[in-house]
Amino acid sequence: MTVRPNVPQIAVITTHRSLPPAIKRHFKKSPQTITVHFLNLKSKDVAFSIDDLPEELNDSMIIWAIEPGESALVNSILKDYEASIISSNKDTLCEELDNAVTYHPYLALTFQKPILKYVQKHGRKGEENEGAPSFTQKPFSTFNQTEKEIVYYLFNGYKTEEIANKACISVHTVNNNISRIKKKLRVKNKIEIVKRVVEVNRASV
Figure (tube, rainbow, N blue to C red):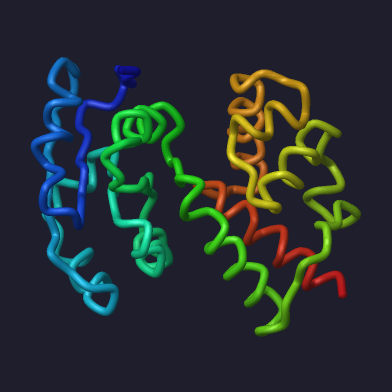
């Protein structure tokens, strides 16, 4: 598996009772310290449960593995801290764990579309916003063409590999551009990039 040597600790939090052994097996040869936490919760309890997590997790790369039907948890998870969120589907677990580490913070495609729909829906005080993002306002007006294309594809729910194919560039180039975009916008993850697009579009109306 791919690991990040500069991250000493990885904490995986899952709502799926049978996953911890499989997660530990996957990270068996990892140089990082791995901890796995099982949370038996419902979406209404997630905010309380997040606040109740051990403080030592603050220094860890956090990965949530949740059921596809638990997409309602994503907003609460991303509200206060940076985390990768993947599906607890055992068929794709190993691949998704690798993606979560390599592209942290990573949001599995399963959970991207509901979140983007939420952002677009609430971006104009509850009105639906399905138009293309405008790049005429700052800070987007200073972006180069590649950065604008990547923001456009993120806005429309594409994941990294799909953006690379659409823009005819490498995945490495996409990730480098996303890192620069996050720095320019002073945001932590891809969802916040999309939120900023919505905010700027709303302000320009």
